[in-house]
Image 1 (spheres, one colour):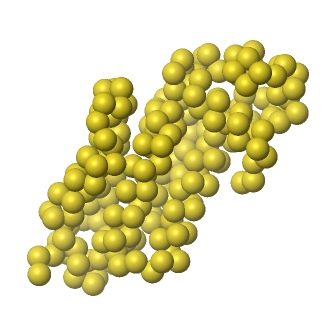
Image 2 (cartoon, helix red, strand yellow; image 1 turned 90 degrees about the vertical axis):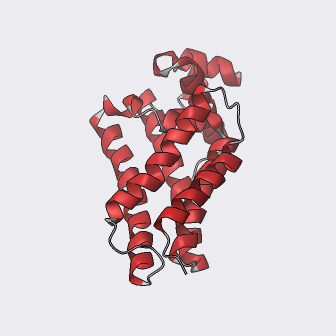
Image 3 (cartoon, one colour; image 1 turned 120 degrees about the vertical axis):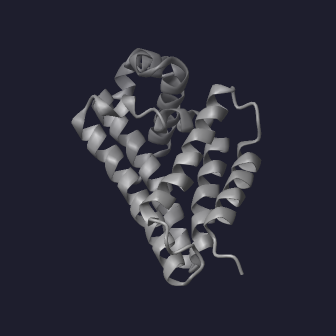
Length: 195
């Protein structure tokens, strides 16, 4: 997905409006006012609110695809691949707290089947990649073999989602990256084969 500079500005501002005021407040009037243009000018960049929501999902999908591709190219070991993916999410959400609020508010996307399908596609891609790291780690005897890879995935990603939710609810009152790193270290100690 290649967004123009103006489209990226619209996506960022739409995410901020949804995160701070809710989806119902994302109107062309509010978005135009936030970036200082007329409502008519917005329609040069997207045709509808649904198209804007698709752009937000595509933006998040691209951010995820970029880190997954970086992990592939780096040829990291399985445990380090898990670490890189999870820590990248913490880094991303620390830099863009509004994005964390929006992406972890599934109810925003559930009401429109096309959004729900796109959101699930992103989640399944994450799951597929991380489960592959876990299975490779088990095959290489780096991760405990008698654990179901899907369960390990849920422990890793579910704990991340819960920590991000706590961080958002606390008004970002703690260092998400530091706390996320410590939490991930604990999880890795639990799943990694002891030398």
